[in-house]
Amino acid sequence: MEVVVKEDYQGMSRLAAKIIADVVREKPRAVLGLATGSTPLGTYKELILMHKEEGLDFSQVVTFNLDEYIGLPPEHDQSYHYFMNENFFKHINIPPGNVHIPNGMAEDLVGACEQYERDIKEAGGIDIQLLGIGANGHIAFNEPGSSLGSRTRVKALDEKTIEDNARFFEHMDDVPKFALTMGIGTIMDSRRIVLLANKANKAHAISITVEGPVTALVPATIVQLHPRATIIVDREAAVELERPYRDTPHDLSEAVAYIQRQKGKDS
Ligand code: GLP
Image 1 (tube, helix red, strand yellow):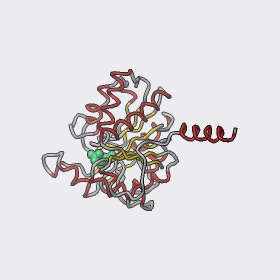
Image 2 (tube, rainbow, N blue to C red; image 1 turned 135 degrees about the vertical axis):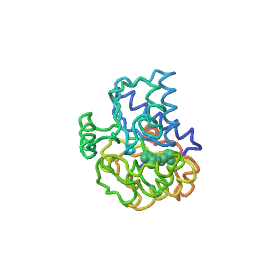
Image 3 (cartoon, rainbow, N blue to C red; image 1 turned 30 degrees about the vertical axis):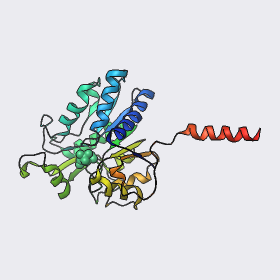
Image 4 (cartoon, rainbow, N blue to C red; image 1 turned 120 degrees about the horizontal axis):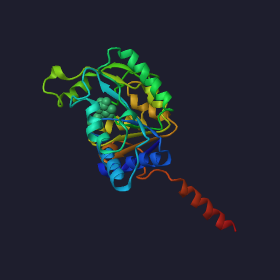
């Protein structure tokens, strides 16, 4: 697992967007796993800029979002369908048919979850999954105590998450109590993971995620077991980390240059 500490939100967002853009440039039919929340907004802004200014092409890209509230129709301004459309999809050239978000209005919720898993498989699996993190260490809507092997399913939201979300709704009664979410096992099947966190309220969750033991009580800790995970945080979210971390991802060319220098010494 690689941990990168950037100076600020913009640095975090730019690096995440660059990593995703590189995947799309290398594989135009890339399958992206996407997240909602305030954290990835800057990343989407950067990707939109790259689309508009550098022609980053999403015409063959396929996306799967992590989660959706149960009971909010796509046009509800707090639904994740609405969020993704407003903040990303309507600004790029992705065909609407390539976009997948769990259907929180499905009559058969269990069937919808199973179909979502099949759709991901049929698309060839997720190439890169973008993640935020809840203050309680949740990823997507896998709340503390979720099975580390879970698949897409219905989850009851934690009291803490409901409280955190209350500010977006007029009445407490309107705040959704359930969601459809990819499971932790589903997320771990992605070929690559990029987890983002900024601001001081994430510092504790990040310290446990990076330096604590792997535990279902802090679902994000599972990324320690992923073979290709990058955690990008800003300074404020990094304050509780004990070890020093770099501000740039490891670059193989550094190692190659080192070999060349060593060889030069021998000759
Ligand atoms: C929600 C989402 C998560 C997200 C979290 C943090 O619970 N289901 O995917 O990571 O919020 O949101 P924010 O980025 O706004 O802090």
